[in-house]
Image 1 (cartoon, rainbow, N blue to C red):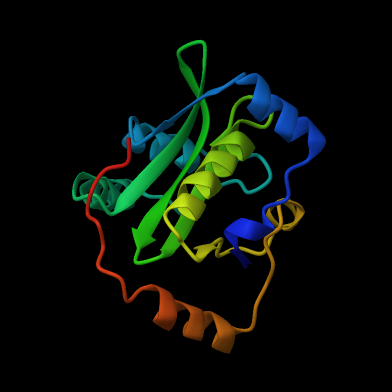
Image 2 (spheres, one colour):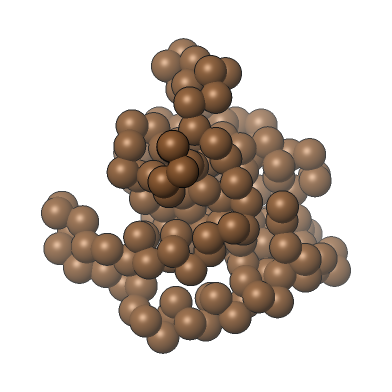
Length: 163
């Protein structure tokens, strides 16, 4: 499941939420906390694959400028966000969370804006879900994905934090 930045579907309600600036969006200010929130068990899934060792490893990758978070804040509280890895012109989305309506979608909206401005080609969503499909993500054949990766990760990594 991938999302090409130009294919992001923005509902009217999400567009209004973004335009009104209900949430403050920040990049890379609370990476570890975003991971910890993503790791919290969700009722429908019962567990998490984001174990403490993984949080430590990704936090080190973040320190080195390869892993990034996008955060939605409301009245000084972190209420949604996502994290992933940027390699070449591909963002590998790992997980997202929301504690307020559309908070993770607002973070995704701003991530897509940032990636489009930097000529990123694709977001690897990894999991095929109805939620991601509703935002414009789609499945592509494995062979096409492999070619897309080969073409898109040949760029030197920036290794810098996003601000």
